[in-house]
Length: 267
Image 1 (tube, rainbow, N blue to C red):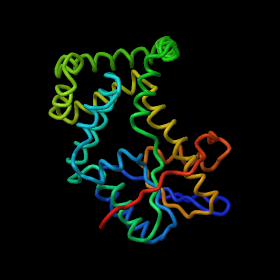
Image 2: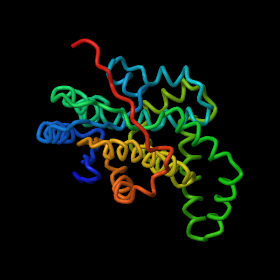
Image 3: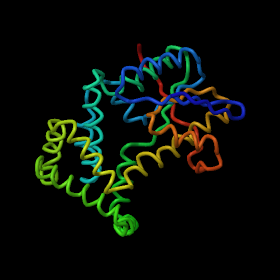
């Protein structure tokens, strides 16, 4: 998926990818080589880029030693393990389908490589805080007032309880949770993600809406600076980014700022 958004006088071309698809890698490389952009923007923050670039499989170890709350750690583990296992199913390593090829190809064509996503630690901390907030509880109560929604939530709760009984997700250590998530069938991992999204609509808001605003601000800054930018992002972000870049006044001003650039060391 490719979409170009012109500003004054730069532009942003969005390349939406499936993070685990080898075809995404080909698209990313082809577009960057064809466009020869000033800047390649990628959907990573500094910590995630460093983990992928050094290629030492440290993501889960970093989570084990992080300052995230237990609830946020479990959510982070669910999404991290799911992404990694999907990548294996497709025969690629995490990051090798889109973000790392984007960085390498950007470097190859002489573009500046920038990191436009927010910190994953901040995102999961915010997610946990919102899930436990009074507003979140009130929102949940309002949603339960609808008969159809109540049935959906009851089904999602039963799904999570069944998975918890099967894999003992809530009572074990973080290490045990990692082991359970790594070994459960991928279909069950998808069920867990879907049930979480139904019960906690905040998940979608933080992981998509808030991050879209953050990334759109950085991309709009580049556009206003006259940069011709290719932005490589997960395809789920594309509709939200399209809307924001089409209406830059809707982007929170605190997010319209220069993104962090990557400094490559060595070969």
